Image (cartoon, rainbow, N blue to C red; front, side, top):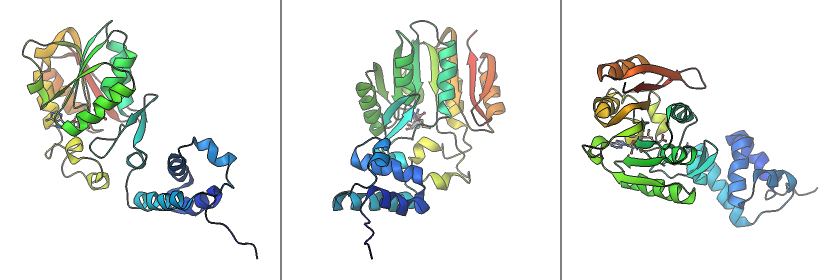
Length: 274
Ligand SMILES: C[S@@+](CC[C@H](N)C(=O)[O-])C[C@H]1O[C@@H](n2cnc3c(N)ncnc32)[C@H](O)[C@@H]1O
């Protein structure tokens, strides 16, 4: 009887597929081997070292446990670039790309941009790269997040000024911007989906209350820090659009509108200082 080798790429992927799916198994194994995914197909009979097999087994069991793939590989793609991530930052989501798209539509030439609650820096770095001549400031209350964000800015060649502190306390009284963006923690503390997100920093996900407190804080002071014609754009939950739009109008913002994400849900509300 011929012995079936367990340590070939083909066998490892086949064994992991019923547990975590072929796609994620491929991402994890390619990451461990430091090769592109195509390598796995072209070399599927290659026998791997005991070390590689043990690492793969460990990653598969962590993934089964619920650890998100980007925390295992240490990176996530956002708007066509890879961002370093670890468990101190939210994993950048495709929904947030809607915020970028809208900001790019309304940004003037050489804009002054403020990103509040920058996390991995995905919004600030992307806008710095996509808006020619932009001057971008990014803030977060978490020093650990700012460390990751600074590394992402450096490795992607983006010029961003980082500041640590809570919302408006990092912004000077006289400072104003063309574009203020934020994807703040907006999940209600009793949201049934929150437990499934246990590996991500809770302080990045929820305000510990009704989900609107950070959005209220950001919106309340935005007018004072927007230049004439400047825009505030925030990401929010699928069911928060009408309330956030109302906050915007109450704050005196004009041209308020809510934009849907690729899944058809309300996701980004924007308004202008007329
Ligand atoms: C939903 S995450 C967004 C991260 C990133 N901008 C993104 O879109 O992936 C919210 C971020 O807000 C930060 N944050 C939470 N409370 C804050 C506060 N009081 N002041 C400033 N940032 C805060 C968190 O540390 C976290 O990085």
